[in-house]
Length: 420
Image (tube, rainbow, N blue to C red; front, side, top):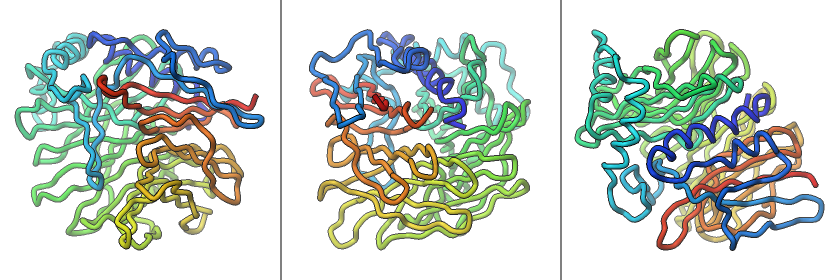
């Protein structure tokens, strides 16, 4: 899906950040929209003068960063780092005024006239629309484009004053983004969506998690049938935490989702066969393991990426797993330095070509598979991380994320691969 509608996806990502950033008094993110129109070059309205292209033999990666900042969370249950929606200025200070402006713009166009339904989910949605300050956080990998006039973005929203976090879904109709009501089944006020993918306009899947009455995190799968979003029962390892981060849709009876289960963190892979979700056995290294992204070119070529913690040296290493049509297996990957190395995004191009993105130490990381092994691919050494990747063609690959600038905070970052 990402490759089939790759340019629409790039434009959708740009538009969703334009929607939030431009209304927040910050510069917007036009680069991906520009790139979708002119893929041969990377343009920026405010390029970093210190940022230079880096070249390999026949290929090159172009890197740039906008001055508009991403206002979204980086929260990871297995990672000590956390950046939340309060810290949108990158200075550690909360920003209720700006977030109020953002939400006011959203509610003006989408929540006005919304009438609470009888069910508690709709009541919570209506209450959120009326809240004075709402923090709306879009997931790093939660954008899927079906066409230039049909795209989805998912995340979560909360008032910040109580445990009232609800799922948050936006739809692009070719002209504007609008909030679409979505179910939030968690009774403990913690509902979130992290990934979304689509088979068609009437068959869209989003995954995440919610907290139930027992306090456990449980998997959350919601489905769009062309008219409304509804919860579809998903699988959980009983008596422990379960969460889904990524999803890839390969057909009406073939959808995969990945994440983790257990307080000790074990890989979690689930499959939709057209009638129900079930857990599919996936390998675990020696230590705690999480799968964060998933991509595929077909039913027998699916890649999932994440990280695992080495229990002997207490550091995290990259983790890559592959489905060959029969079983999941761990494929050796590279952790370039002794410190932490994590993968967040993956883009499958063909059976002999795939990309993975993340960070190593404090620098961005890109790895590539040639069909037989994974290796680090030369890319700009930027302090930050790459959260997502998409391959439009073998010679048109994009990675997006965020970089850190001292005394300024986090800024958007995107890198582009071409074959010439």
